[in-house]
Image 1 (cartoon, rainbow, N blue to C red):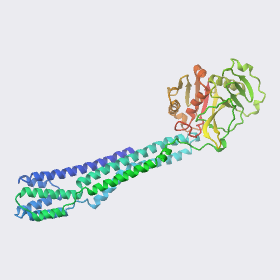
Image 2: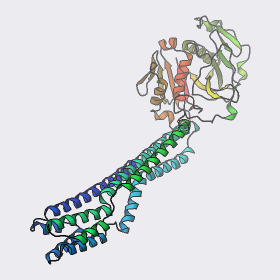
Image 3: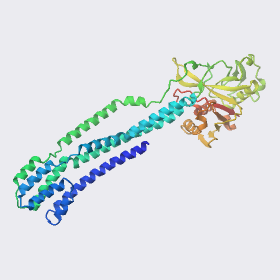
Image 4: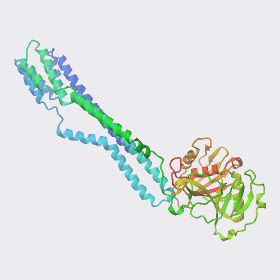
Length: 495
């Protein structure tokens, strides 16, 4: 709609410009033909009839007076008086209509864009009541961004239309304002009189022409130009002064929306460095049993299950793992386990441990703890969790990912994202959002199947694995942590 309004507005500006040019050219050419026909008695009547009013009546009366044997001075004086009284100014009703059409042409695209944005926002607020929290921001951003883009385009069109109309108005003022038309008519009368009666004198008419001829100097236009330059310079200085404010407005978008009652922190061992990402949901509780995987050992519920040699587990570590000294049965079912993993460990180690625990203790899902770049009141940062199930078989799948040694394959759309790309996480998020099942409103969390090739499990670190999950789960519009919780997707890891 905004584009259509802009096309109509620009068409109106073009029509006005063409009308001004055609009117000026027709009047100028008609007077030139009249001057050239002044020495030919046969062509002169036709040239006079080709003129428009009020030129036709003035020249007809002037030539008729000469034909009645009146003196040139008398006829020319009478014609000059008629020219000074001629209605060259635009009629009041036409001026009002012109101003109204100009206002519509200038502000039409902007008004349509504002109305469209208002309707979209009203529809957004109406639909938000029936959408889950995880998708409200994305759906809202998807509806608002086109509106703001249309508003920006409408503002650009308005500025362009104002500049174009200013040029058209300047051209009309220069070539077709009443003073110019009157001066052009007076000049033509004097030239035609000189060609029709070359030996006659007209002292009264000459003196009268000097008195009533409109002033056409460039003094006032020059003053207006200087004032416009001063105004433009002042506006430029204001923009320079506001550069810091505009730079602040261009800063990365951040949201202070993290739930105040979900700022739990789970302390890790000194040798464990948690992965950092922009996905994950707030940690609801920290009372589940914890699984800590550091570069040197694996600990579950305060019991060391295995040690690692250069970051690798023994081939049959499950058989030598000690029995649990603290009862797991005391925890509610379905059982969930909080995973505190170092970002440097290999995914084959992580998958081996989680698969073994899922089978032995019937763990329903693992809550992978990650660090967010959201600072609390002190120097610490918030933590989030990514829920991952191991080996589950959900009925409905929103998207399937295959982590390879060099990238990620999105099976649902047969698209690969290479880890070598500088913004691979943004590319993965963009491609994943092309699947409506991931982000459309639904009562249950969409399921994301994640598989890994054998080579990828051997080479990929736990930190890279978290980056892949966060790229799909994160809700931030730009690169970096904006403070929004993740979408709460349900990840299923299949060995």
